[in-house]
Image 1 (tube, one colour):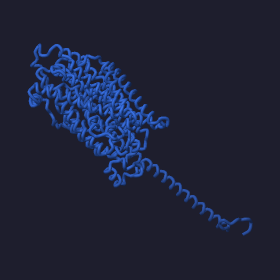
Image 2: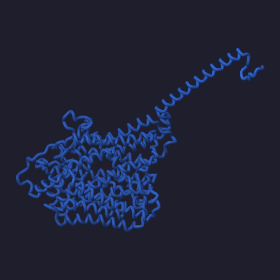
Image 3: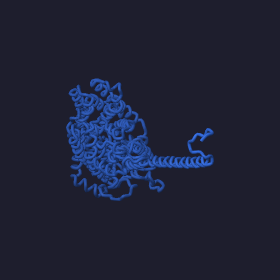
Image 4: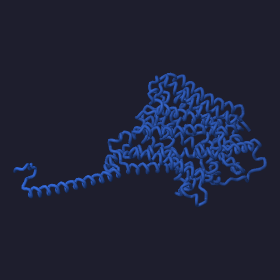
Length: 628
């Protein structure tokens, strides 16, 4: 079955409302200053900002990918939410009180001020821009495959519709349009996922039946306490994954930090984080429950047990088309949720890319610095439009590329979050680390993280699904529409895992012992290893080149406890390079030896002169001219 008239009506209405909100905010804020356009004049309220943060990184692939994860591999990944909560608290308590009072537009301005190096700030910005643009392109492509199954629209047309819609309201309305559209889209997403949970659980007898089926078929696992780093998931690996995923996404990424920078006070910024944490855990719980509900429906006749079924996310599409379409409007609401997830993620990236380009590269230039607010605002709208066009083009390009390339691209992009987290940790907690140490750690960590990701992609294989059954299947168990859908989605290779590699990637090392080296380590540790490499290299290079003194660092840019420790540990303050000290000692010794040599020569000359005087009967300094 396909979408009915009511479903299409709901879908169309959702897209139109998003556009109208953007147009309205653009009209209301038509005289906004450049800072008002990008930051909402730093007067935005915590609740809408929190809802925007909640859905800003929950893409359409997260909805389908995480539900598919619960379906095929069980609930262990759910533990990731504990790491997410812990990281959000640290962001609220440690990062916001230091960075928010700076009133920056670009997060990476903090790096420049901390290390007094504009080039290091620009290096972090370039890293974010490259990753952000390709991420937008990919965000538009994989959902378009799923939406083709739902709507019948061509993949390229879906890419264009989604890209053009979010570019339109982002360009016209600025950050307020993005945030308030996200609020609407958050509601749509919650309702869409709720539709699966409520209808699906009722169909099988309730949530208790859903959980019972999952439990008896090995889907419920939360406390795998094994410390083996080579396994795919465990309690500890998922905690680490959630913690560093959140630091990378909400702590050191412009697209999300721009949300709490748009508030008027540190307290409001912290409220944004806390409200977003509650909403995020709630939405993710719904998505995970939806996966278990879908499993309860299919567990006796599992479509993933069919030959060629490689991507767990496609069962979500199959479920919607075979179950939700029986109730007019429900499938349309879910498809609207998919569209909403894409629009919210892409518009968030568009807004943040514009902020980075303006604050880090254009505004500091003398030509643009003289722009009036009107000219600057017009330029920012042009940047958003340009970024949207680039995103659409990249989405079209990505649709022509092979899956393996995309998978490698986004695995590497995910690995780059570790070095950036490490750089911020060094800046916040290690005030004695100098610029040479921090920059060396950052760049070496990037190189090694990319090397690790490439090695993993070349050597690891996908883990088999948990036990699947087709014992309850019959020749007419599923109708022709369902079979057609299964074939279409399988052939199209709905690639949920590349874009959310930190959430749904299910790679494990080969059993060959030759592979169980560094490349066999779980992908959950990639960001963590990047952080460790960055910090270790930074400390070692600083020890070799000399530590900062108290005068080299602004104490307001460092965590208070770390600064107090730095003041007490005088051994760390302003220590010169060991190599310089060796050279200084060598030079001093050389001078001392030369001085002593000169003294000995002088003494010998005096002795010789006195001897001559005694022999000639003259005194020193007398002029002998033939008379005494």
